[in-house]
Image (cartoon, rainbow, N blue to C red; front, top):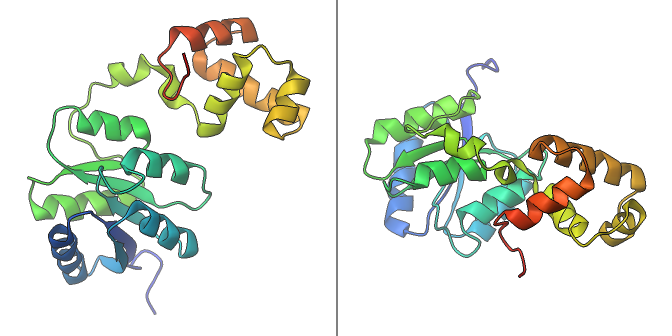
Length: 211
């Protein structure tokens, strides 16, 4: 009987390039550490698979059509049993930082060795974060990146000057839930009240913010 420690790592691969997808599939199928569950050429296909069948790790293309890597990561962050994600992308100076900021667990450059991809996925499955050198001071300087999707929606609604009761109605949640999210929001932004949070909102370049 195979013990839990020896259980192969369930993995799903997604890449827009069919040649890369085929090559990755062959590589992972040859490695006994992994069990290749499925592959996809789109973010929607990947999302549908991992929501139906829980897996340990997903390897995705940063520019995966049509959602793209960042949006796919954001959607999966809200799922309870989402796989840990490794970005397999072009070796540009800023992409590892963007992947880390978005919430990926690892990054591997396409130009790197095959063994590096395999080992990174194994490390990520074990709970590690695996990235090339990234100056984390840049991440810490932008608290917006620590907010969940729900907290970003809350911050934008808060900027309209809504009361807790109005926030409750607009977001379809209880007043107690509003208070819970606001408390987390204040902690992450290092502010003490809604006025300071609103000031922070308008002084930050929040993605999707209207003028």
